[in-house]
Length: 343
Image (cartoon, rainbow, N blue to C red):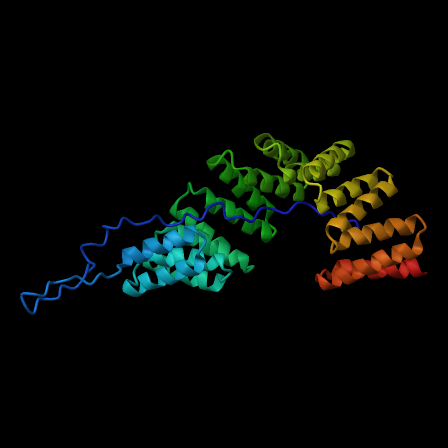
């Protein structure tokens, strides 16, 4: 019931590389600008019927995307594709818009078409990988990120996103290697340091993790995740005082941070201060009423302090939440504790 609630790694895609708006003159040699109607009489004047070109549609679609009008962007980019089905940029940008709307399957199809038309176009590989990752298909995502790396060994986004995929598959060493490569290409990219620090914590390399979190906080002294994750690493090293200081700072910066209260509660328990731990678990629950581990740990401590009925209430709530959240092993621990309390 005392499992850590460590920081969540950033899952951002670093950058999307939105297609650049094409110059309006690019397609003039192959696009009709209008149909000239011949005059029938001397009194009638010829006039031109204006047609919207694929360039106009593409540029308008990109502009709508930039203004968060994703449905409008899809409509314009689809119209551009109808006029020219070989526009790799149009498929790519429509994929970006579809991903923003949560249509990952549609986005993947568009990125795939973009790659089919132009296999050397790196951005669709990266963003298709991101869409695969959003579906939990990390092996497919990793293949796309690797293809991007092969196309451009200096593309930091490819390494960063591949590191996240490695992390999701449990390969911490490979993840750390890719975060390190990202940092070599983007030395001030905070999230790469943060994620590498969490991977190093997961690997038991707490000193190196703390070094990463120190760098994070040097780059951004107000970043709550830096303090919270450094506190976790410090706790594992036995620096309980330092861990408490980091959680205090995290809470000062973010008073409604449930995980900071929870993690501070873990340290207070290790220091032998059960009531302080209960108080922090209570604060965590106040912020997040679905925080199953906070209920479970508070119930355990209440049981140890002799508050049997209050303990049962907490652990039963924890069991119900673990069941709803699909955490089978934690649910079983809660059930076992309920039985113990009832003896």
